[in-house]
Length: 161
Length: 212
Image 1: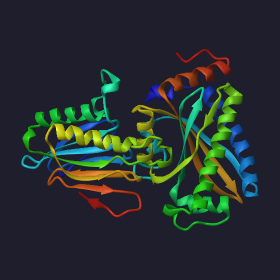
Image 2: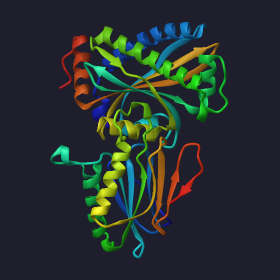
Image 3: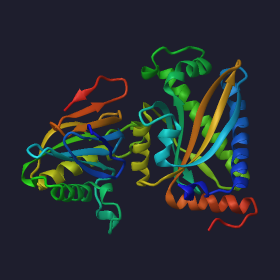
Image 4: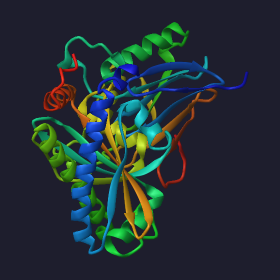
């Protein structure tokens, strides 16, 4: 069979297990959040677009907002058999690619990052690694065998978190 | 997918291509004046694409591009994006400022502002052609430039528009300078309500019934 690659598109949430990998291509101001259960080698990835579902009332796409995406990710991981008490998280993305256009003091990318951090704090999930902010987009590959995340950026060496 | 494909009829697509050609003609004149030599421009393709297919259209999910971004205001809200392939930036800067920049990832100030100016000329020309044909008054804001992964640029624009399922109107434009050809892609991404307005204005000006 060999390992499979699952692509997690914008506003999507997916769960997979060893030896597969979950990939989010081209994160700009979106944030990719991984949750990993190291004992059962089950992991999930959410490709979050916006910080909060609150201004939007009833939400049709849970994966779009930090708060609802993480709830969805946790319940999908639970139904795959992950131990929710032993999860670790990593965050990638939240860039501000068109820096000149951001009139707000804090870019939407960094507001996404804070919203994800807050939600993880609320769920008492530790953040083991981050590669966030800046002005460049990122592609992330999440390996379910050991929980490592490979981060690729344009014109820069590959990094692991 | 078929739903997007049918947003405009073949006749309307031809009209859109005509708008593109009028715009390209004006942009070519402005550009030739700016660089002091003759530059020809023509529209090679017009398409309506769902956002998830844009990176594929530009050559793949991990493709690197130079993108000029401009907010669109007026009777319709949205974003205009002009994409150029990164590997053609030296040729493009050669055409615009008469100096080939060797490092596409680190363009000089001058090179960057020339490419932003090109984006702004193209967008202005397309918007005024749209006004003339379908009487939708649109203006563009200040251009910004990003050189990065096409998919990440789109990702940021979708966040800005707060939409996941976005439709883009694409006008592929080819530039010709001393027999050397260069292609750029103009994308207009309207906000959801604005797309309806655009299609309605389009049908009305062509004397067609509205598109549902």
